[in-house]
Length: 142
Image (cartoon, rainbow, N blue to C red; front, side):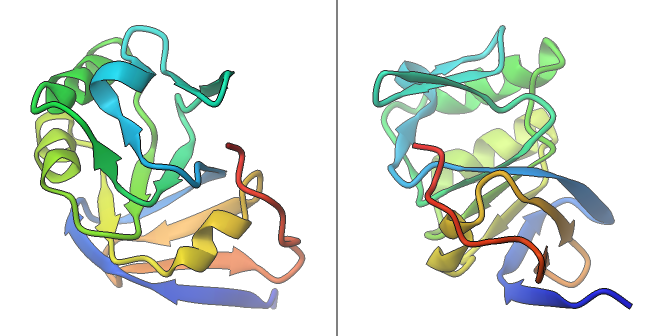
């Protein structure tokens, strides 16, 4: 049996279990200004980060109320993340996740930002994120 570390949050949208590579961004992003909805790319700190088909972790979002429509565009173009994990509750991400049907867990411990690149499991029914012990602490992607 493999050993895992469990982080607890609060699921606000979605159910079931999602597994995938974690992309952790340690700075708040604006879905309107920082995300290319047609390509599934976040532009932050001079980098372009692919979030399509990944699990995205961030502190919270900033910016315009148009942000949820960009999240919807991600889903429409098949470029949405598998799930979004946020440290702080965020109304814009909540609305966008419902519109785009992207699973969302809030109130995740900030520690999640240390595991970018790891393959993790998000149990939406139990509001937990499981990180394999073999996953080494790393810096956030951006």
